[in-house]
Length: 428
Image 1 (tube, rainbow, N blue to C red):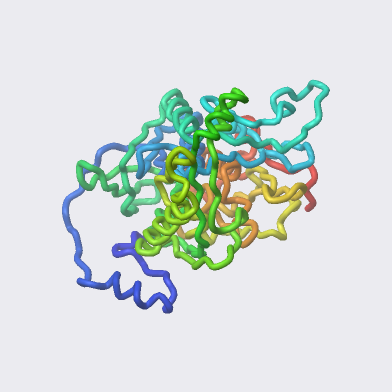
Image 2 (cartoon, rainbow, N blue to C red):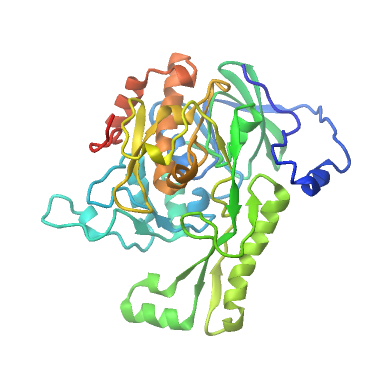
C-alpha cells in the first residue's frame, strides 16, 4: 500500500541550500480542514496535455466513467499552452509509419482548424506517391486547443479546468481520493484508479513512488508577426507565412546551449526564473524592431520545461533499446532527431509496484538520457496516454494492480484501436 506525502518531500541536492532555506521560512503547519467529496469516478486522469487527453479518451471508449483534471483552462499542455506547434513524426524517417491509433488521430486534429505542412503522401497512401518528408506537421497551437475541446466533449469525458492536484489519499487498493484545489476551495474526487499525466509525476511522487529529477537548460518558444510577414502571407495565400516561430536558448534536442544555466523544474523559484528568463530572450531579440517591423503575437502560458521529474519504473528505457523488441510493448515511436531508430515502449516503463493503482503517461514515464528526449514529445505522449487509459479500464474491470495486468490482453485491445504495438524491424 502506498502512502500520501503530507508535506512534499524535498529531493533537491544539498547544493541548493539557499533554496532549501527559502522553503523553510516560517516552519510548517498542518491543515485539518474538512474536504467535501464532489463525485466518484472509475478513472481520474490528472493533467490535460496530449498524454492526459489520450488517456481520458481511451478510458472513456473502454466504458469507464472518466474525469480529466487540468490546472489551466486549455487542453494540450506544451502543444498548446506551451506553443510547441510541431507535431513530430509518426514514422521512422524511411517511409515506414510506426505510430498510429490516437497518436495519428490527434495529429490530424492538430491541423483540423489550422495551417499545416503535412506531406501529401501521408494523406494519400495507396496512390503512387513517395514521401518527401516525415509524417509530421506544423500546426497553430490555438487551433489544436479548439479541436481538443471538441473531441473531449464528443467523447463525453468529464473535464474540470482550473483544478490543481494537491495530494492523494489511498483508503484501499481501488478506493482513493484525489484532493484538488479549486475556486470553490479544496475538494475531493473518489476514484478507483489514476493516470498521472502531469508531465512531472506529481501524483506518483506524492504517493511515494520512486522518482528521478533532471536539469533543464533555458529554452523559449514564442511567436511574432510583422507587416513584412503579413504581406508575404497575402502574396502566397498561406496564413502560416504571417507567423514566425522563434526557438531560443537550449538546443532542440534538449542539450546545453552556450552560456545557459541549469534549472530545476520542481522548484517554484527556479520555474519562475526560467519563465522570466525565457521571455527576456524573446524580448531582447525583438525589442529594437517592435512596431511596424515586428510585434509579439503570443507568449507561452506554461513553463516550457523539457525534463523535470519522471517515474523510476519497473523498466528504464534507454538509447540502447532502439530497434529492440519488447514482449510487453504498448506502442512504437520513431526518433524525431534522426531517421532510422524506432523505440518500442515497454509497459513496464509506465508502472511501479509502490503505487498499484496509479500509472504514468507522457514525458514522465521511466526513460533516461536520449530515450527521455525521444519519449517527451507529442507522439510518445499520445502513444503512452492511450496505453495508460486502456490499462486503467482493464484495472477497473479486473480489480488488478497495474503491474499485474495480462499484457497480451492489453496489446490486443490497443491493436484493435489501431495501435502499432511492435516495430517490424525490431530485434529480440
